[in-house]
Image: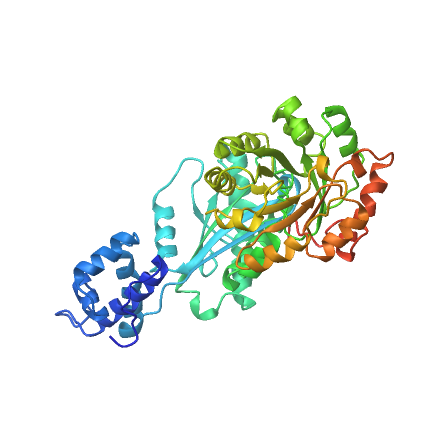
Length: 484
């Protein structure tokens, strides 16, 4: 068939694309008794592709594809092309504004009455829940805005005082925001009788200032509507901010390694008191990683990570377990103690490393592999099914005298695995001079130990590394967005 690849697909995505094209073609030439396009069939689709239906069944089974999914996608296209019906609008918006008990948090849906939003509107209207009774938003009694808006309380309404906040300032604020959004062109005029809105609002039980309740919910609703109509956020916005953000209510930051280079302070001395002393002298910087070293963990156990977290709750902490066996188990141990990353020994079998990296990705922390004493790091990585987040080029403490860091391996790693996203760290007797060379050759993380931890002035020693490049001199990300 012209335009459709009849070769066996290489992936599930390839199969879905082939099936969708073929299903559309199959449906275009069939009509039901009522003159509407009929549903594609497996036999007809297989014929369109130019293969036997048994072959198609085999492909569906191999790539775990349900033909019903293809049917849904293709019928959506048929309706739009033949019947001329535009797909129902289904837009989502969210906004958080204000502070204290009067802060406003609005989640909303806006879309067609005959689509998913309309069904949610009708279901919410007809299925009441004690303490969360939906109500129509009104600017004043007997004056609802258009599009009609269903207001749903998030927090359980327990008494008439709580109800007064919902039926008073919150209800009026949401309704006025909708009406103003139409007047200002945020919501198209020609959609006011076709669309409806479902708006969920948060009112704190201890909120008391009705004026602030009104102001914050008005602004939050209007902002949520703007975002819904613009399909905010864009992918670029989401990717850019996801590792910068700090949730204002959560109370702590979840650090991620999103803009190298970094300085990693290795706390190798087996003394908890000394480790806490070093941490207390670390300057405020987004460029610093704290390594809970192997000797420290061996003396105190993995619980030492949690102990150090009390001293530096927002720090990025990596647990240097140097795992050689039971990769999954050791990742879980570090994860349960709040580590942000965990290190396995590159000398471990590939099976152990695969299990280690897989588990780290599953629980959402970084999996690092230390290539200490690994003769061919590139070959070791090639043998792994799951690629690590961090590759550490490491010269051991007992090997440092008279040995090079092997910095040329950085370029080889980048060239060999140019399709992988990973960070490269260098370790082993790092001084400011060698660190500068490593950064110049492309290292993302500089791991330093005794030069900092045994210094009489810890902060000054760390600052020497933070001054090596213009990027590292930017200690704090002043553009981090917490709330908008």
